[in-house]
Image (cartoon, rainbow over all chains, first blue to last red; front, side, top):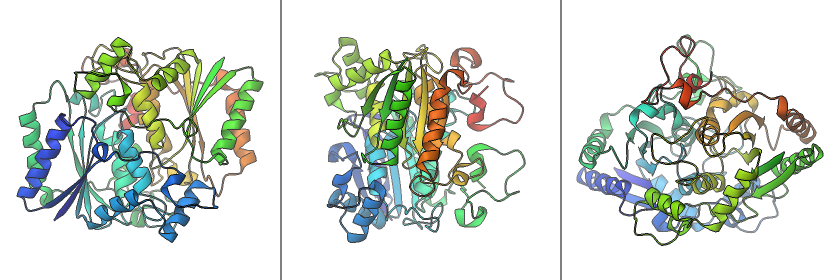
Length: 247
Length: 247
């Protein structure tokens, strides 16, 4: 097993850093080959712009990206990340929840690495949501948040953490073909969370990866019509929102 | 009326740029004083890090940010954005939907501008979700996407656009006290969308701002218990997901 961890936290002495080290150690103990993209340490370029590809006469940004992809003229730091993903069997994303999403440096990793041609094409035929460039691999989110568990519960004011993660887990990971395991969510980071407890929870999840069922997101190729709408009658009566997209 | 537009697109000749110009012209025609933070043109620093505040002995990132806030030692580019928000009556966020969220450069605007002390405090007493530093002002999202409308509809495979925007509209805008008007969503950008039609739709929304009802997000101070969970019986029976947080 090859596992690649994409990690974003600015403080090398943080709870996140300690959990990353715990993950690396546990996975290596299980026989995985582990690599880490530590985005802050790498000084990862967060902003997708025209510097990401060679000179182009195509001013339309997405089209220029696609043209650069076709010519192999994509920035080397992007190519290196793509290669790590293609080599991995398992991809872990680890980050603190900032404004109900990933830190900007990780959003920029999505924006730049999953460029037009690698992560998607603006074509309705492009295989997505259950198919895609990373099909056959698995992914899991490890997220820390200062919020208490109840704030992120089904009735919590922040919104249910599983719904808050949908644009990432479904919209990025499942979109590109990854099977997404349920996330490891550490609440109360910085005040309630006890490192020994949290590290134990993380180890248990890593030790049972093989037996863990992925989230049952519905495949675009199976459950949707040609307008990409869920086929009638697939869901239990009364289902609404993101829950529609989980079988 | 003072309107501040936060705008993120890498291409100065894009549909987004044309819509931004249309918005500025329309609002000025209506008598607004308009300012624009064009994040790409400003070369906005997307990544929140220790360079955002003066030297600190506090290694914990969020705590160091809060300490810097208390001492007034926040980076000047952040202070300038905060001042623009405080002066505005209406805040518009305009961006292309990239990987089901804002481009990294705008995520970094959230991460850095709404720093510990200005946008939030890690305290359960901090006024949030309907209260906060921007209370009394309004906000609206203007978002473009290459996806077809059906893909982002209630049953669309991408997820309902209103749910996809929840972490931004509720988690960032409403969190800091802004009343959030329903978004302007431009689908089929780059292939289906006709500029004249889209510009007309945008103008109509801008001309009717005063009469437009905000999204009825529930205030934390009114509808939630001390654990920040929605009080029992507030919602129509069977409501689940983000819909719980809209009255």
